[in-house]
Image (tube, rainbow, N blue to C red; front, side):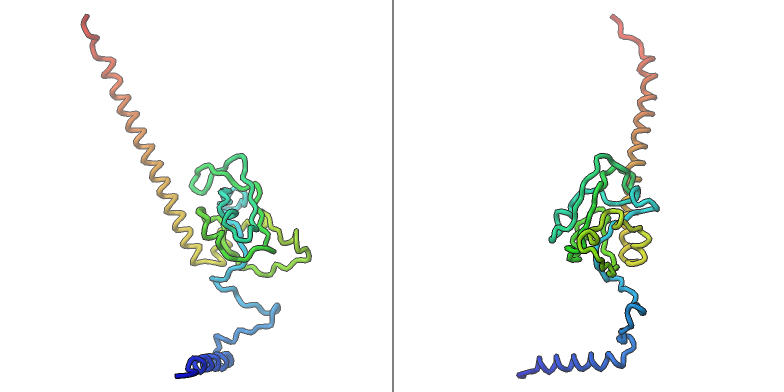
Length: 208
């Protein structure tokens, strides 16, 4: 039927228009900034760096692999790798970012940096009130400004954070199980060697 798509579109528009006045769940207009609506869990704005524990430096998950810097479409991430190493979440010595800057005046909030990070170290924030009188330096955030705790991550993205913690805990358990197995194997080998030595010493010398 000619014009059927237009009629359906107008009907949907009319349904939405009327619903916005009678459906309580859709009466979302508030007097901002005096009134504020809670951010949805799926909301995203700009990236932040995750750290575990209470020390942003010691607990920072980022190992300065620079994958996010290379994959960032607007090239708004700048990283310098450290010269020394610190233990990561499984206790393995890793490099860390001596410098980690994000220019949020350029960031397009695409979340590609989050998708490519193999260490669950960078996530998307829900904070949007970032207006600043300094359009250059005020919107260039360093690692100290970007670092936020895992507790904060659980607060803004609870479902996603729970899944991440579960995966990291499983990875850590595998590493610890392998370390225990290796230690047990070394102990058994050492015990077997210690048992064999007295036998070798006690063996008679061959006759001439």
